[in-house]
Length: 308
Image (cartoon, rainbow, N blue to C red; front, side, top):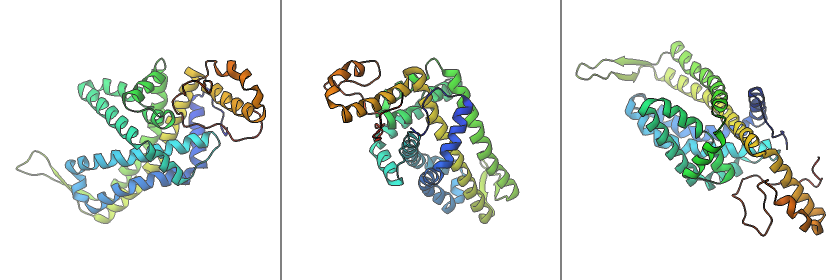
């Protein structure tokens, strides 16, 4: 593995997040820019319409679909990079598309539940957003979907709610403050819109008065926010790994995978003797038993036995 999977502090998650971001920046950034281009094109083609509330509502379905695909591809890249098995641009998207149905269903269900919780009293919405934060990672890495994925995410957060909340809060501050400041400062330095008060309507009309400034600020904001959004996705995935390690000894499971592969390759006759090891509570079952859910993590192809 390129990075050790073990319990991580907030500092570990942030530092490893930046390390993965810089090591695979071009690929991760290209993935998210690709899915953001159609949204940017609509904003630039229909500026006045998109500044209005109705235009923003029209963008929601497209944004959900495209960002869901992008997030799935990013998680695949992050997971394989963390294990020292980099994947290509095409492979990442192919894998994400193979999980698209589950990703969309899970995202829509969790989004609706969080929205209802927010409308109810805000606090329930925040709570649901935290306990469902690993839903996409569960779909991609564990091949679960829908309520099963949401229940799995809740299971991983259970007992660590405030810790998960605190780490996500720190990551959110980094992503939100920097990304938000670009748009805010850009709009102040290069004003592009004006607000018109309609005498016959309680709602003002917002329109673009300087298209060049609008296009420049909108594009720059998207480029910067995309980069920090990638960082947020990396940190959330690392936190997922951390929670699995804390609750399930996830690092030991990976070590057992390596040991089983090495034993089968170099000592086939010892397969029977390894049954007791495989039957241990590692999440790895004997070959003649029902297979566990697909995790998306393959044993290393190294020809060397794992180190103790």
